[in-house]
Length: 417
Image (tube, rainbow, N blue to C red; front, top):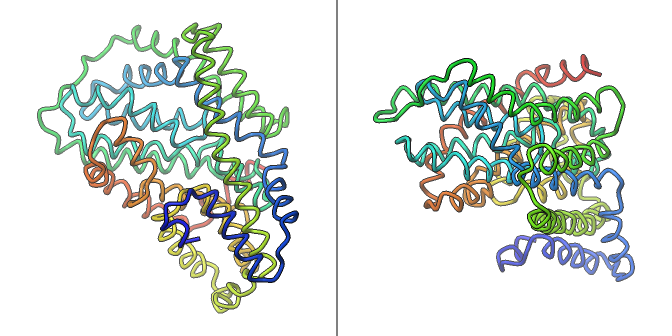
């Protein structure tokens, strides 16, 4: 796989070719079996959530839902020192509870807020880094597209994974608030918004009412059992479509065609990755590689925290080279059995796995979220990397905190169950 990646082969094709190479090496070559595994990789009802969450994110951005959330946050905290940074964090957390896509949220934040922060005199590197760091909260706070993929890949409860992300997502937001608060004390020459009267703030909040209602419907519906996570994705997409076309009336049928086309292209990429990973995963199972890895790490199964520290360290390194979805599809089925053997809660491990892979989205040299911000802001990538570095340190500290005290993740899940 590393060889194909080095040649610049797209990840989905690299996975298929790797699986085919393993089949040949294991003397298990059968083109019909390879084709069956390609189909099996996407033949899953829970995976239907992926295209609908992608569509919901596109509809939010095109229909004015994301902009209204940012305007509401700006009305309440835009006037304080470093206010637009706090607007970015607040908007990122609210948008994370609707789309579940780091790339969609980051693109929306950068498109709207980067020009605004530039005009107010904020340093562009730090601003872009904060947006990248805020954007990756989306895969943690439910609903989360990566958690759907993880749940399907490892046969873990998606509903419980969603519940596990609530508290860590809030802690990530608080970590950014503290880091930006320290950063804002060193800002000079930055313009502040004029404080808005409370009536104007309430008007901005009222305009964002339909956007704020969306996560209540999604999370409340899943918690009460009205619909499953897969059905929640459909509800989210339909709700965003109704709000964008009939309530806000900011999206025409012509724009809808473009939204559907973008969502379809992104869905095709993700689904092809899932299909290719199934081929490689099947061959990994035939080769009994999980047992080999268990043998290497066998001595650590007596100490779950040390095992988690080692596996999370390995995943941090993997995250520098692989995107989140391939990381889940390739390594989650291999690592989860080892964690379960050591007595680690599978839902807790799933949350930590996704969180670690999410941090990889802002880790150079790959860092897809970094590339999104740099592209939208027309900035050099190295400038964005320097800007995100303080927040990357914060996230790694949070990861260590959850390893040392897993109850932070497991206790809320047990209570919410």
